Amino acid sequence: GGGGGDHAEDETNGADYYQGGAAGGGKPSPIIEPEKAAFFIILSARQVDLAISTTKGEWFVEPKHAEQINSPFNKGKKVMVFFTVSDSRHIQGAALMTSRATQASTKASGPLGNELFRLGIEWFRTVEMPISIAVEAAPDLLLPTRTTQFCQEMRPKAGESVMKAVWNSPLVSLYESWSGDQDPPADLLADFRSPAINEIAWPTNPGPGFIFGCNSETMDECLGRGVFGLPPNMKAAAACIQPGASIFLFNVTDRLLFGIFEALTQATMNVEPTAFSKNPKATSSPFPVQIRVRVSLECPPLEDSDPILSDILRSRGGSGRIGGLTHAQTEAIASLLASQCGALQYMVEYRDGLRAGESVHAPPIALPPRKIERK
Image 1 (cartoon, rainbow, N blue to C red):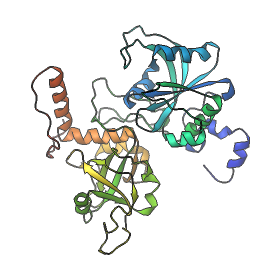
Image 2: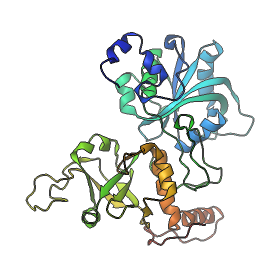
Image 3: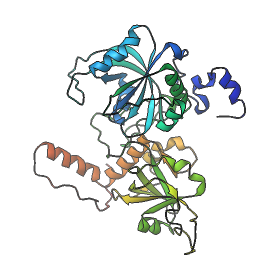
Image 4: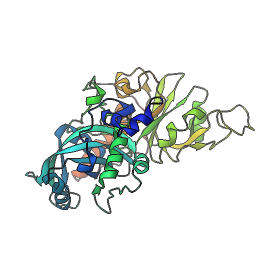
């Protein structure tokens, strides 16, 4: 965060944090006296449920958690809820409880088939903050898990630290449209959107993705070795890559985006030291920040000028195509690629056929690329 004025800010109880800190924008934090508030962290099964929650202003919890979360609310305390998605290793934002949890009138049932309680919430900030930052801010943080419980209470001190970290994290959108039906909002700060009810996205691992770069000379080597590389200055940016993450490859010569690849490793230095080098004895590659990948779906590439791709990556501004992606961007680009080659429709028909009990052929492992004309 900005120049030398930081320490003075810290002494005034970090007033800058509550306005969105260095990350800027969004709504200021609704909690000015954290010691008088209550904080919870909730585990969601899917990110899409959070996107829907931002637009519907509600969340559903099990009866035991309803009691736990209602207790401070009934005493007049402000209750802030942080959300994380299973296996994503990220906190996705913060909301304030607006009404107590009551039995849902609709027959909502939880993962165990038990009845759920509905609470009203107002989202204040959507981010994609690595859990490691939260744990650094609040070392005694207990995270919710599928095996322990989906809702974990936090001590006010830990809540305050995580809240500051969330308000210092850049704003992101939890959903990006890839159908071309919706224009993105002009204001990223109020970007609460969710998919249409019938929209099905290409399955991607929770958590961020990444776009690697190549040119016409190195592309064959990238694909042949199954190794993608970045220049040394991108080491920190690539630290977010986990095995299973969705990866894309941008050919800077032809201005084409290829995918969908899957990361097999985290980014490490010089997986193959001679890669992308003219020198067969090289000890360090010119693109030493490397990951191993495999093809997860072979699709015809997207053109750089594709208007939907530009919409999805609008928050990049002029910083080019290569770099990290939020989960929402990753899922949208994967879905755009998969819908163009017919794989998404194939998957939907296969799934619907299975549900209807028809005998259906399983999709091939990788569909041969063919471009489908946009309707």
